[in-house]
Image (tube, rainbow, N blue to C red; front, side, top):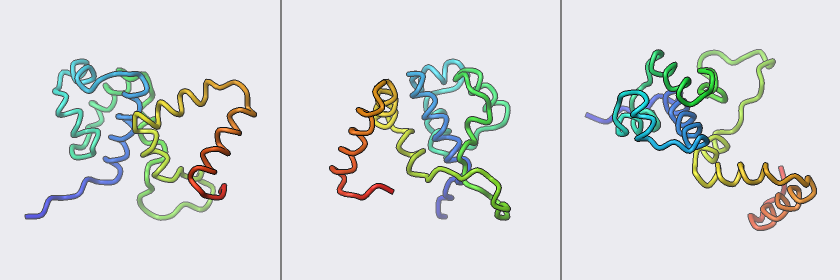
Length: 135
């Protein structure tokens, strides 16, 4: 029997848990201790392999210091299309990048640069290195 792929919403919520956990510099083990579960269970949540129940998501939100809604921000839409008034969603690669330690470190330190001109020059440098035109 073929393995069932994780639900896109479960994957998104798990990635947001991982991103926030990394933002607060908390290990999977430490989060598991706060919740009374193993780090392996945290890994499964973060990959979207195991669905996070409502009460567990509430516990995670308290431990990580964010509202439950944080975990659904930018989630893939399900159901009929909206009428065009909904806020545009970030491309998935942005969330994927921010869920990595490199993405988080780069973003955190980039935002610490107070000079807007220096930040702009860094963006220009990255665009030049990547060899792509700005979008």
